[in-house]
Amino acid sequence: MDMIEIKKGGKYTIVSSSGDDKPLITEGEYVGYAILGEEGSLVLRIDSGGKSKLRLIPVGTISYIEFEEENIIAKNKDDDKGKTTYFN
Image 1 (cartoon, rainbow, N blue to C red):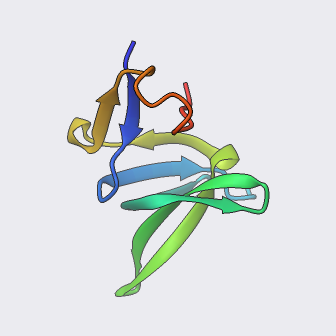
Image 2: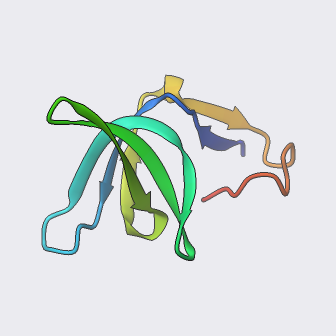
């Protein structure tokens, strides 16, 4: 099976836990991956009140990610072994 990689510049909707009973829904442009403390985070550029802001979403809080198929890159999982962390 091919692995998929989300594309920088693509638009994504990420549903994550927010610390209360309701999930946090983030819609924005994927900018990259960052380390927050000891945990990896996805970085999205969001529009908040007419201003562009960056939001870091810790990977451990993500429930699911929604996106259009044009915003993924299909790769053979053996091509970049050791270069990228894949989540199944």
